Image (cartoon, rainbow, N blue to C red):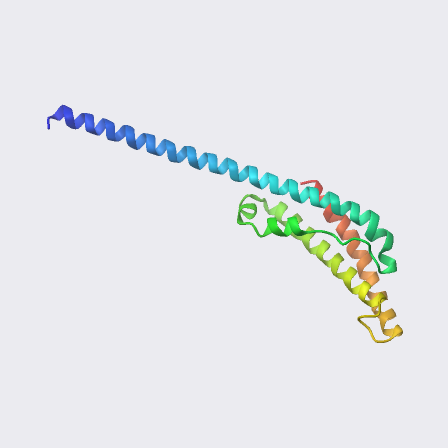
Length: 160
């Protein structure tokens, strides 16, 4: 092989390497854009779930919690799925994560209060009326504070 042949081989090798690197960079950039779009879609899904929970809060919890029988529980399936997804965690800001975690915590607690109160009202969790009454008073006092936190969490989620 002559020197000219070697120089052509080196030029072709350089072109191939440059093309390969540009392809890798392009794929990496495209993947990054797709992941960011997916993250935004996850946030939108959590916001949609929060808006639905706002309706449940106003039409079910706040109207009936003092009676201990709430018509519909909150849903947090979407928020739980997103929080468990590494892609969501990768692109979420610390503030977003704090807001979503508080939302999940408050909504889960409200559903737990609902379950306990219904069990107590229906007589399944306490033996006598005095014991049920004592439990209900304590739970209702804490539940009311929790519902205020739920309202704040829902508002924060819809503002992300």
